[in-house]
Length: 278
Image 1 (tube, rainbow, N blue to C red):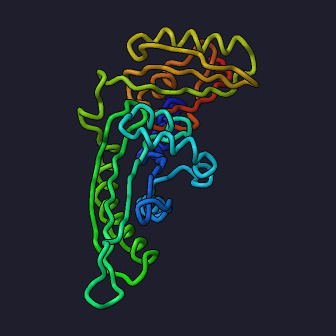
Image 2 (cartoon, rainbow, N blue to C red; image 1 turned 180 degrees about the vertical axis):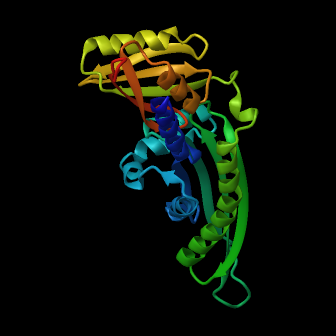
Image 3 (cartoon, helix red, strand yellow; image 1 turned 135 degrees about the horizontal axis):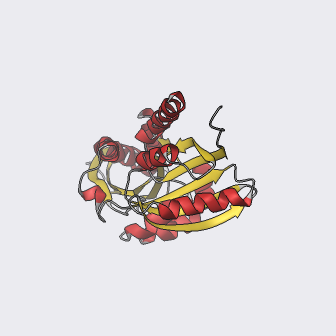
């Protein structure tokens, strides 16, 4: 009984980390209509961090910039965005489009000119490619030069758009509604299992997963190397409940330990089950 309570405590502790999603920020951002910048992207990462939301390392994003830009050019396709986010281990992709342009005429006899920026965002869940939230804002500022004017306009519109979408995205993640649960409540979960130092353990885990007809709709073994197996499953349960099911009813002769629970990933470790008299 004590061991069962300990296992459930570990699950509850791990589930805390699933309360916030890991976000991939992708912004197609242009100053003066054509010059690529990263004003809004940096702002988004900073504002998410203030809310306790982890983001994909932007250095990693920059090193894959060309592929990400291709994905952004097809931003109408949520599945393409979700596939990109899955590759980076994200739970949500925050997709943004931002552009700032100066008005042609100067203001009166001065060197001042007005600059207008429009910024839009949408948040897409990785597991089902559903739009969680969206926002669109504009801002107009006055400045004496193009660089300063475009930057100020982008920041003003970006801040308004991000303040609108981030709280909604977090709320929808923590309390998914019917729209976020399309597909009959099914979700794709990747299960990584360590401690598979013997082939019989791999077999028992595979047999166990395939026997869970009420919890899992499909099970595919993706890989097995150096004692680690990766399975991709279609789960009818939330990830934390799937973890509970495996801990409380583990494969034969094995004990399941929870390493980490996220919305679409479950990291486990198996050890030999203790003898009855232990």
